[in-house]
Length: 379
Image 1 (cartoon, rainbow, N blue to C red):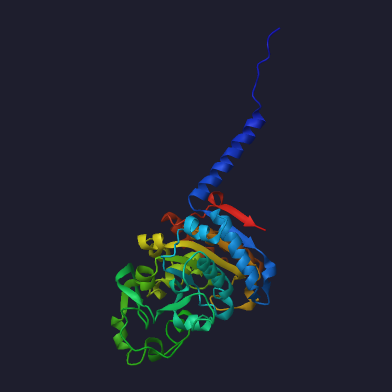
Image 2 (cartoon, rainbow, N blue to C red):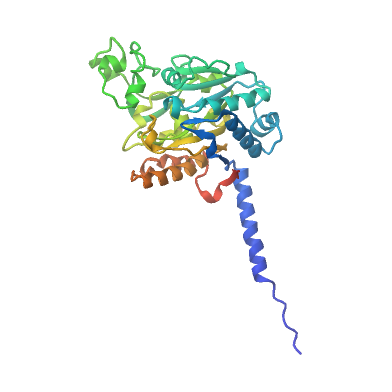
Protein backbone atom coordinates (compact mmCIF):
# COMPACT_ATOMS: atom_id res chain seq x y z
CA UNK A 1 0.00 0.00 0.00
CA UNK A 2 1.32 3.42 -0.95
CA UNK A 3 2.31 5.51 2.04
CA UNK A 4 0.25 8.73 2.51
CA UNK A 5 2.37 11.88 2.36
CA UNK A 6 2.59 13.83 5.62
CA UNK A 7 1.42 17.37 4.93
CA UNK A 8 2.14 20.08 7.51
CA UNK A 9 -0.66 21.57 9.54
CA UNK A 10 -1.34 24.57 7.33
CA UNK A 11 -3.66 26.43 9.74
CA UNK A 12 -1.25 25.93 12.61
CA UNK A 13 1.65 27.35 10.64
CA UNK A 14 -0.51 30.22 9.42
CA UNK A 15 -1.43 31.09 13.02
CA UNK A 16 2.23 31.19 14.10
CA UNK A 17 3.17 33.19 11.02
CA UNK A 18 0.53 35.85 11.74
CA UNK A 19 1.50 35.85 15.42
CA UNK A 20 5.15 36.37 14.43
CA UNK A 21 4.20 39.31 12.21
CA UNK A 22 2.18 40.93 14.98
CA UNK A 23 4.94 40.51 17.53
CA UNK A 24 7.52 41.82 15.06
CA UNK A 25 5.38 44.85 14.28
CA UNK A 26 4.85 45.57 17.97
CA UNK A 27 8.56 45.19 18.69
CA UNK A 28 9.42 47.46 15.78
CA UNK A 29 6.92 50.07 16.97
CA UNK A 30 8.27 49.96 20.51
CA UNK A 31 11.88 50.12 19.35
CA UNK A 32 11.19 53.12 17.10
CA UNK A 33 9.66 55.10 19.96
CA UNK A 34 6.09 54.68 18.70
CA UNK A 35 4.69 53.02 21.78
CA UNK A 36 1.90 55.09 23.36
CA UNK A 37 0.62 54.48 26.88
CA UNK A 38 -3.00 55.54 27.35
CA UNK A 39 -4.57 55.87 30.79
CA UNK A 40 -8.26 56.70 30.53
CA UNK A 41 -10.23 57.12 33.75
CA UNK A 42 -13.22 59.45 33.22
CA UNK A 43 -14.10 59.33 36.92
CA UNK A 44 -11.21 61.74 37.67
CA UNK A 45 -13.14 64.62 36.01
CA UNK A 46 -15.70 66.54 38.05
CA UNK A 47 -17.41 69.65 36.61
CA UNK A 48 -14.41 70.93 34.62
CA UNK A 49 -11.94 70.12 37.39
CA UNK A 50 -9.87 67.02 38.06
CA UNK A 51 -8.91 64.95 41.10
CA UNK A 52 -5.27 65.81 41.82
CA UNK A 53 -4.47 62.58 43.67
CA UNK A 54 -6.03 60.46 40.93
CA UNK A 55 -4.13 62.34 38.22
CA UNK A 56 -0.89 61.80 40.13
CA UNK A 57 -1.57 58.06 40.18
CA UNK A 58 -2.47 58.05 36.48
CA UNK A 59 0.77 59.75 35.52
CA UNK A 60 2.90 57.50 37.69
CA UNK A 61 1.22 54.39 36.27
CA UNK A 62 1.80 55.62 32.71
CA UNK A 63 5.45 56.55 33.29
CA UNK A 64 6.38 53.26 34.95
CA UNK A 65 4.55 51.22 32.31
CA UNK A 66 6.14 53.13 29.43
CA UNK A 67 9.67 52.86 30.78
CA UNK A 68 9.27 49.33 32.21
CA UNK A 69 10.84 50.51 35.46
CA UNK A 70 9.76 49.97 39.08
CA UNK A 71 10.54 53.42 40.52
CA UNK A 72 10.28 57.04 39.44
CA UNK A 73 14.03 57.49 39.71
CA UNK A 74 14.72 54.54 37.43
CA UNK A 75 11.99 55.64 35.04
CA UNK A 76 13.45 59.12 34.58
CA UNK A 77 17.14 58.19 34.60
CA UNK A 78 17.18 54.81 32.80
CA UNK A 79 13.97 55.10 30.84
CA UNK A 80 13.85 58.76 29.78
CA UNK A 81 17.43 59.92 30.27
CA UNK A 82 16.92 62.76 32.76
CA UNK A 83 19.38 63.16 35.64
CA UNK A 84 19.73 65.45 38.65
CA UNK A 85 22.17 67.59 36.64
CA UNK A 86 19.59 68.49 33.99
CA UNK A 87 17.57 71.68 33.84
CA UNK A 88 14.18 70.27 32.89
CA UNK A 89 11.73 72.44 31.01
CA UNK A 90 8.07 71.45 31.21
CA UNK A 91 6.56 73.12 28.13
CA UNK A 92 2.86 73.66 28.76
CA UNK A 93 0.01 75.08 26.68
CA UNK A 94 -1.38 78.09 28.56
CA UNK A 95 -3.59 79.66 25.90
CA UNK A 96 -6.82 78.01 27.07
CA UNK A 97 -7.33 79.96 30.28
CA UNK A 98 -7.91 78.34 33.68
CA UNK A 99 -9.85 75.34 32.31
CA UNK A 100 -8.34 74.39 28.94
CA UNK A 101 -4.65 75.04 29.61
CA UNK A 102 -2.30 72.25 30.70
CA UNK A 103 -3.77 71.34 34.06
CA UNK A 104 -1.77 72.24 37.13
CA UNK A 105 -2.60 68.88 38.70
CA UNK A 106 -0.85 67.00 35.89
CA UNK A 107 2.09 69.43 35.73
CA UNK A 108 2.54 69.14 39.51
CA UNK A 109 2.46 65.33 39.24
CA UNK A 110 5.27 65.42 36.65
CA UNK A 111 7.34 67.87 38.70
CA UNK A 112 6.86 65.90 41.93
CA UNK A 113 7.95 62.74 40.13
CA UNK A 114 11.09 64.51 38.89
CA UNK A 115 11.86 65.72 42.42
CA UNK A 116 11.45 62.14 43.63
CA UNK A 117 14.05 61.17 41.03
CA UNK A 118 16.53 63.68 42.41
CA UNK A 119 15.92 66.77 40.26
CA UNK A 120 15.68 69.84 42.50
CA UNK A 121 12.69 72.19 42.22
CA UNK A 122 15.03 75.01 41.17
CA UNK A 123 16.01 72.97 38.10
CA UNK A 124 12.42 72.38 36.93
CA UNK A 125 11.04 75.21 34.76
CA UNK A 126 7.40 75.31 33.67
CA UNK A 127 7.13 77.59 30.64
CA UNK A 128 5.10 78.82 27.70
CA UNK A 129 5.54 81.67 25.26
CA UNK A 130 3.32 84.41 26.72
CA UNK A 131 3.43 85.69 30.30
CA UNK A 132 -0.15 86.97 29.88
CA UNK A 133 -1.31 83.44 29.03
CA UNK A 134 0.55 81.99 32.02
CA UNK A 135 -1.11 84.57 34.28
CA UNK A 136 -4.63 83.85 32.96
CA UNK A 137 -4.07 80.11 33.32
CA UNK A 138 -3.06 80.54 36.96
CA UNK A 139 0.62 79.71 36.58
CA UNK A 140 2.03 83.21 37.00
CA UNK A 141 3.05 84.29 39.53
CA UNK A 142 4.22 80.85 40.60
CA UNK A 143 1.44 78.98 42.45
CA UNK A 144 2.09 78.69 46.19
CA UNK A 145 3.89 75.46 47.02
CA UNK A 146 4.46 74.54 43.36
CA UNK A 147 7.52 72.26 42.98
CA UNK A 148 8.87 74.20 40.00
CA UNK A 149 9.84 77.63 38.70
CA UNK A 150 7.69 79.47 36.13
CA UNK A 151 9.13 81.40 33.18
CA UNK A 152 7.73 82.92 30.02
CA UNK A 153 9.52 83.44 26.74
CA UNK A 154 7.85 86.84 26.32
CA UNK A 155 9.00 88.99 28.00
CA UNK A 156 11.14 87.15 30.57
CA UNK A 157 13.70 84.90 28.86
CA UNK A 158 13.41 86.00 25.24
CA UNK A 159 14.62 84.58 21.95
CA UNK A 160 18.06 83.55 20.74
CA UNK A 161 19.25 86.00 18.07
CA UNK A 162 21.67 83.41 16.69
CA UNK A 163 19.23 80.53 16.12
CA UNK A 164 16.28 80.90 13.75
CA UNK A 165 14.06 79.16 11.22
CA UNK A 166 13.66 80.67 7.75
CA UNK A 167 10.51 80.29 5.66
CA UNK A 168 9.69 82.14 2.44
CA UNK A 169 6.36 83.33 3.92
CA UNK A 170 6.75 86.87 5.27
CA UNK A 171 5.21 87.71 8.61
CA UNK A 172 4.31 91.10 10.02
CA UNK A 173 6.11 91.51 13.31
CA UNK A 174 4.35 92.55 16.51
CA UNK A 175 5.53 93.28 20.04
CA UNK A 176 7.24 90.23 21.50
CA UNK A 177 8.87 89.14 18.25
CA UNK A 178 12.64 89.51 18.59
CA UNK A 179 13.13 91.84 15.62
CA UNK A 180 10.13 94.07 16.34
CA UNK A 181 10.88 97.74 17.04
CA UNK A 182 8.33 99.47 19.25
CA UNK A 183 6.95 99.86 22.76
CA UNK A 184 4.97 97.19 24.57
CA UNK A 185 1.18 97.57 24.13
CA UNK A 186 -1.27 97.37 27.02
CA UNK A 187 -1.30 94.02 28.80
CA UNK A 188 -3.23 91.34 26.96
CA UNK A 189 -3.52 93.30 23.69
CA UNK A 190 -0.40 92.12 21.87
CA UNK A 191 0.01 88.70 20.38
CA UNK A 192 -3.03 87.31 22.24
CA UNK A 193 -5.47 89.68 20.53
CA UNK A 194 -3.93 88.92 17.13
CA UNK A 195 -4.30 85.20 17.77
CA UNK A 196 -7.98 85.57 18.57
CA UNK A 197 -8.69 87.69 15.52
CA UNK A 198 -9.74 90.84 17.40
CA UNK A 199 -9.67 94.16 15.56
CA UNK A 200 -7.10 96.44 17.16
CA UNK A 201 -5.64 99.82 16.36
CA UNK A 202 -2.02 100.08 15.27
CA UNK A 203 -1.05 101.37 18.72
CA UNK A 204 -2.92 98.59 20.51
CA UNK A 205 -1.51 95.80 18.40
CA UNK A 206 2.05 96.93 17.82
CA UNK A 207 2.81 99.31 20.67
CA UNK A 208 2.81 103.07 21.18
CA UNK A 209 4.85 105.21 18.85
CA UNK A 210 4.47 102.91 15.83
CA UNK A 211 2.82 104.39 12.75
CA UNK A 212 1.00 102.44 10.09
CA UNK A 213 3.60 103.53 7.55
CA UNK A 214 6.50 102.20 9.58
CA UNK A 215 4.90 98.76 9.66
CA UNK A 216 5.91 98.21 6.03
CA UNK A 217 9.46 97.52 7.22
CA UNK A 218 8.31 95.45 10.20
CA UNK A 219 8.18 92.15 8.34
CA UNK A 220 10.45 89.12 8.46
CA UNK A 221 10.88 85.65 7.02
CA UNK A 222 12.64 84.47 10.20
CA UNK A 223 11.31 82.86 13.36
CA UNK A 224 13.78 82.93 16.27
CA UNK A 225 13.94 80.07 18.78
CA UNK A 226 13.35 80.66 22.48
CA UNK A 227 16.43 80.80 24.70
CA UNK A 228 14.67 78.34 26.99
CA UNK A 229 15.08 75.80 24.19
CA UNK A 230 18.50 76.72 22.81
CA UNK A 231 20.37 77.79 25.98
CA UNK A 232 18.55 77.25 29.27
CA UNK A 233 16.86 73.82 29.34
CA UNK A 234 18.88 70.66 28.80
CA UNK A 235 15.79 68.39 28.65
CA UNK A 236 12.18 69.23 27.74
CA UNK A 237 8.93 67.48 28.59
CA UNK A 238 6.05 68.61 26.38
CA UNK A 239 2.62 68.78 28.09
CA UNK A 240 0.02 69.97 25.54
CA UNK A 241 -3.78 69.93 25.83
CA UNK A 242 -6.25 68.09 23.61
CA UNK A 243 -7.93 71.09 21.96
CA UNK A 244 -8.62 72.33 18.44
CA UNK A 245 -7.27 75.57 16.99
CA UNK A 246 -8.81 77.49 14.09
CA UNK A 247 -5.37 78.50 12.82
CA UNK A 248 -3.92 75.01 12.29
CA UNK A 249 -6.57 72.48 13.22
CA UNK A 250 -5.25 70.76 16.31
CA UNK A 251 -3.20 72.36 19.06
CA UNK A 252 -1.60 69.06 20.03
CA UNK A 253 1.88 67.73 20.69
CA UNK A 254 3.37 69.01 17.43
CA UNK A 255 1.77 72.42 16.92
CA UNK A 256 1.77 73.66 20.52
CA UNK A 257 5.45 72.77 20.90
CA UNK A 258 6.58 74.22 17.56
CA UNK A 259 4.66 77.48 17.78
CA UNK A 260 5.48 77.83 21.47
CA UNK A 261 9.24 77.79 20.89
CA UNK A 262 9.62 80.37 18.09
CA UNK A 263 8.39 83.88 17.32
CA UNK A 264 6.72 85.31 14.20
CA UNK A 265 4.31 82.37 13.87
CA UNK A 266 1.12 84.18 12.79
CA UNK A 267 2.29 83.88 9.20
CA UNK A 268 1.84 80.10 9.30
CA UNK A 269 -1.78 80.05 10.43
CA UNK A 270 -5.03 79.98 8.50
CA UNK A 271 -6.36 78.76 5.19
CA UNK A 272 -3.79 77.89 2.56
CA UNK A 273 -1.12 77.20 5.16
CA UNK A 274 -2.44 75.50 8.32
CA UNK A 275 1.06 75.22 9.78
CA UNK A 276 2.38 73.04 6.96
CA UNK A 277 5.32 72.49 6.52
CA UNK A 278 6.45 75.01 9.18
CA UNK A 279 5.48 72.90 12.21
CA UNK A 280 7.55 69.92 11.08
CA UNK A 281 10.46 72.06 9.93
CA UNK A 282 10.63 73.99 13.22
CA UNK A 283 10.80 70.72 15.16
CA UNK A 284 13.31 69.14 12.78
CA UNK A 285 16.41 70.58 14.41
CA UNK A 286 19.07 68.49 16.21
CA UNK A 287 18.84 70.49 19.45
CA UNK A 288 15.04 70.07 19.51
CA UNK A 289 15.19 66.34 18.78
CA UNK A 290 17.82 65.73 21.46
CA UNK A 291 16.23 67.85 24.20
CA UNK A 292 12.54 66.92 23.88
CA UNK A 293 12.48 63.55 25.64
CA UNK A 294 8.79 62.97 26.42
CA UNK A 295 5.28 64.08 25.45
CA UNK A 296 2.47 63.87 28.01
CA UNK A 297 -0.85 64.79 26.42
CA UNK A 298 -3.40 66.27 28.80
CA UNK A 299 -6.65 64.80 27.47
CA UNK A 300 -8.34 64.88 30.86
CA UNK A 301 -10.91 67.28 29.43
CA UNK A 302 -10.84 67.31 25.63
CA UNK A 303 -12.27 70.10 23.48
CA UNK A 304 -13.17 69.43 19.87
CA UNK A 305 -14.29 72.89 18.64
CA UNK A 306 -14.04 76.57 19.56
CA UNK A 307 -10.39 76.43 20.59
CA UNK A 308 -7.95 77.64 21.71
CA UNK A 309 -10.39 79.47 24.00
CA UNK A 310 -12.47 77.45 26.45
CA UNK A 311 -15.85 76.55 24.92
CA UNK A 312 -17.66 74.33 27.44
CA UNK A 313 -20.34 73.21 24.96
CA UNK A 314 -17.64 71.48 22.88
CA UNK A 315 -15.84 69.64 25.68
CA UNK A 316 -15.71 65.95 26.50
CA UNK A 317 -14.70 64.57 29.95
CA UNK A 318 -12.32 61.99 28.56
CA UNK A 319 -10.19 61.64 31.70
CA UNK A 320 -7.16 60.50 29.69
CA UNK A 321 -3.39 60.91 29.60
CA UNK A 322 -1.37 59.90 26.51
CA UNK A 323 2.34 59.37 27.12
CA UNK A 324 5.00 58.72 24.47
CA UNK A 325 8.26 59.88 22.92
CA UNK A 326 6.38 60.11 19.62
CA UNK A 327 4.33 63.32 19.21
CA UNK A 328 3.05 62.26 15.79
CA UNK A 329 1.55 59.06 17.16
CA UNK A 330 -0.24 60.92 19.97
CA UNK A 331 -1.64 63.58 17.65
CA UNK A 332 -2.78 61.13 14.98
CA UNK A 333 -4.62 59.02 17.55
CA UNK A 334 -6.37 61.99 19.14
CA UNK A 335 -7.27 63.77 15.89
CA UNK A 336 -9.29 60.68 14.98
CA UNK A 337 -11.19 60.85 18.27
CA UNK A 338 -11.71 64.61 18.04
CA UNK A 339 -13.01 64.25 14.50
CA UNK A 340 -15.55 61.65 15.60
CA UNK A 341 -16.97 64.14 18.12
CA UNK A 342 -17.02 66.89 15.49
CA UNK A 343 -18.91 64.68 13.05
CA UNK A 344 -21.44 63.88 15.76
CA UNK A 345 -21.94 67.62 16.34
CA UNK A 346 -22.13 68.37 12.57
CA UNK A 347 -18.86 70.31 12.63
CA UNK A 348 -16.43 70.04 9.65
CA UNK A 349 -13.57 67.60 9.93
CA UNK A 350 -10.08 68.67 11.01
CA UNK A 351 -8.48 66.64 8.21
CA UNK A 352 -8.00 69.49 5.69
CA UNK A 353 -6.12 71.44 8.39
CA UNK A 354 -3.81 68.79 9.84
CA UNK A 355 -1.70 67.72 6.87
CA UNK A 356 1.31 68.89 8.90
CA UNK A 357 1.00 65.61 10.83
CA UNK A 358 1.81 63.65 7.67
CA UNK A 359 4.60 66.09 6.87
CA UNK A 360 6.02 65.38 10.32
CA UNK A 361 6.04 61.69 9.39
CA UNK A 362 7.99 62.50 6.23
CA UNK A 363 10.54 64.40 8.35
CA UNK A 364 11.00 61.35 10.57
CA UNK A 365 9.43 62.93 13.65
CA UNK A 366 7.20 59.94 14.34
CA UNK A 367 4.58 57.62 12.88
CA UNK A 368 0.90 58.13 12.12
CA UNK A 369 0.23 54.63 10.78
CA UNK A 370 -1.93 52.76 13.33
CA UNK A 371 -0.22 49.49 12.32
CA UNK A 372 3.11 50.88 13.53
CA UNK A 373 1.86 52.32 16.82
CA UNK A 374 2.00 50.02 19.84
CA UNK A 375 -0.95 51.00 22.04
CA UNK A 376 -0.53 50.21 25.72
CA UNK A 377 -3.87 50.91 27.43
CA UNK A 378 -3.97 50.86 31.22
CA UNK A 379 -7.14 50.19 33.20
